[in-house]
Image (cartoon, rainbow, N blue to C red; front, side, top):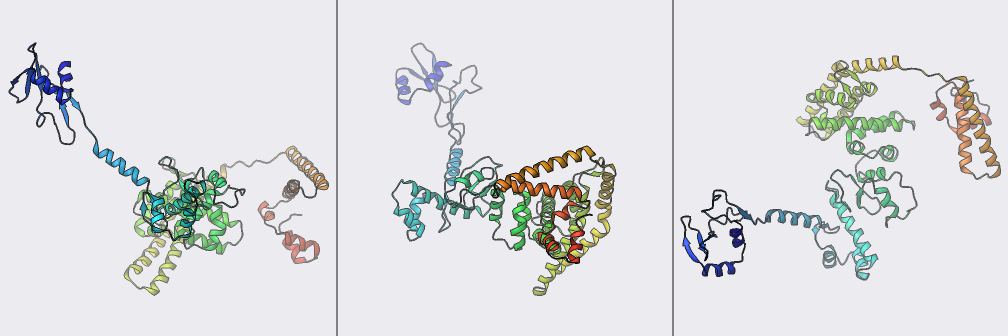
Length: 481
């Protein structure tokens, strides 16, 4: 067998020379058998029939017909996977394409493309004015590439500067428009060439990049200025910011609650609705927005998603977050009211049957929530909340601990005061002095600390400068005697 394989692997000219020096004996299988001087047969397969087992994977059989293992052809696989190589080549070439910023087409040779087709553009003229292979020219080309790829990335096809794992989240740099990993975005912003203020803090890089993505959406300005920067930059926040009904709910909430501390409450409620929407999408993949869920046919879906979001345990029949589950029914009714107002405004311009059906669906869903939500969610959540309050242990501090805290605050305040006397521009000592004074006032006050925290300085000054009874009463409501 080793001799036969050795013969089959010989080049064609050597096989012909061997055939001329030996006797050719035909066989029943229409193959050619060579006999050498030692009368040992050497088999040569027919190239058209036996050597090709299939068109897609040609193979050369190297087992003679009269061999004891002739029923099992031992073949030499010479398969060339043309399909895979073509796919890999097309994928690699497609990934190397750059989206042109001017004509919005994908090109392979980007420098040649802009030189031939966009000479009149100012940025291209700057690039062409620089010498080839220079660092400045490369940086300008790189910046122009990132601008074009940013336009392509707006179609939900992000084209990052550096690719990572499949689960990597990419966010754009607000200066150069290049897509980078969300974990490394802060590091890039520190050395970004387009960043004019490189020494600025990069603490909120993710939040700023996420807000930059949705800057063109029609959202209430107060949400963009006050609420969006405070939200955590993750998938939940992005869904909340993109959904029109969730943003309308937050804007309406801030119109009712105008105090600054309610901004955090508005962002929390937005994230609750976004988490609910994400869970609904898992159950019903066809749903795209919260407005589409507000139909009577999706009532059971809303109940199931609420139980999953607020961690309902079917075995113990308890909620791990009963407070949020208790408030979700009211939140959904308010969303229905907002959607109903939007539908009514739209029906005045376009009176169609579909708008009338939407109005009827919203009113029916409100009735379902009023009648059935307390049995499906609220009653159990309220019971769990009361049980948690009963089992909550109230910890009362000892007098010795309060004395230690008071002494510590006094010592810190005295040290900060001494440093301020030596150096009046010491900001750190001033902050420490203010914190210690505030902490001592809270210890003396028997009311809620949040009310004292929101007390305006002007109210305090007006009490000292003007002996106004009304100002004194407003101040006295916060400070206990």
